[in-house]
Every structure is written in C-alpha cells, then in structure tokens.
Image 1: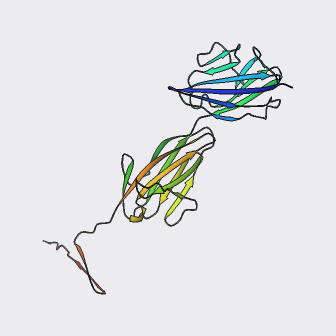
Image 2: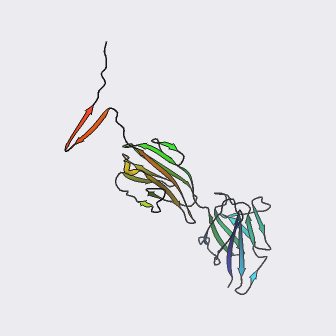
Image 3: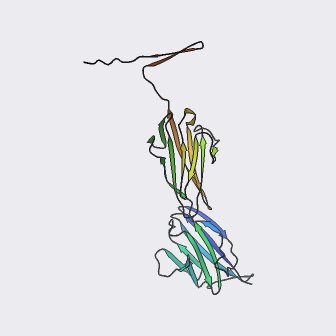
Length: 254
C-alpha cells in the first residue's frame, strides 16, 4: 500500500528551520493534513513524497493545488520542480499563501494547511485617555476602554493579562466575567477591556495576547492613573474630627 508525505521546509532570513508533517494518503477531500506555520517573508518548500514502503518514488507528482485551484506555471510566486516533487513559495505572504496545499498523484492526494501567526495591528485606548507611546494616562474615576484588534485568517483566541510593574514576572490573567470594575467583550477579530471608574489600584501594565493554532503574539500597554486634584480645599484631620476649609472666591458685581 502506498503512503504519501508532505514535508515543509521553511527558510527565513539567515535562520534555517526544517518542519516535517507526515500525512497518510488522502482519498477523501474532507480529510486534511497537519497544520503548519507559514513564516511571513520566508521561503517555503512543500515536498510531496510517495513511498511504496521500501523506497521513495520520484517524478510522480502530477499536480499541486491551492485551496482546490490548480497551480499553473509559469508562475512568479510558486515554482514547481517535478523531479523533486516540490512546490516552492518564493516569499510567504499573509492571507495569499495561507490555506490548504494539496499534491495529487492520480487518485492519491495529501493536504497540508499553512497558517501565519496572528498579528496585532491595533492596541489603543478608545476615546478616553491620552496616548504616549506604549502608555496611556487617565484621570481617576474616568472610564477607560482598551481595544485590541488582530489580523488572523485562523480563528483567534484573545486573553488579557495584568502585571503591576515592569520588573514583575507574574502576570495575572483577567478572566471573563472579570472581577470588580473590569469587563471584557470579544468580537471575531477584536477584544475590548473596559475599566469602569478607574481607581489608583488599576495602575498596571495590561497585556493583550492573541493566539491561533500555530502561535501567539502579545502587546503591552502601561496605564497611568492620576489622582483627582481639588483646588482651594485643605483637609485637616484632628483626632476623630475632619474639618474641611473651603476658600471661596468672592465675585464682585457691579
């Protein structure tokens, strides 16, 4: 009985990685192979090997398909070497090269799925707060919404974490339903973390993490909270008595 394999070799920058994904012969279009990472801007080589159990046969791959469509040559992005049973992606591109690649030999075929790691292309406060690089300044008792938007063809999974200082290695996972004045709302490609009535205790580094089937990515945002300042009020505490002296400005009228 024949078996078929697809081997993925990924070359990115000066780093060489070799990833192997073994697939049995697929006789049903509903059956798919393993999922592998597509390295963006890297060269990707798909190799389809047919074996009779004792030796590998060459010059046997008849066709390559991308999401069911035949890949034809000449092609400036995909190149096929039939003597090596390989298909080379010149430069991996997000979306364009994500999907199912199939090699076909007669009635036999094998499929492998390429997916890029997710990308966070927006992480910022909505409406409230002033943005300063990777930090945001808010005033105590205001409302803060942090929006995290991802790019992923594979269904992304969002999670939020919080750490109290840059030196801390302990990140607290903020789960939904979140506690206290914090809530989380997710859409397909975005997630919002909302802090109602910000307090000084909410000062922290907030982390948005996005994960799909091949990897994860995260970004940080430092939230600074300013205490409310009230002019012309002096608070004196004497034993159990609190005396508030308010200096009111007199308005002259004509």
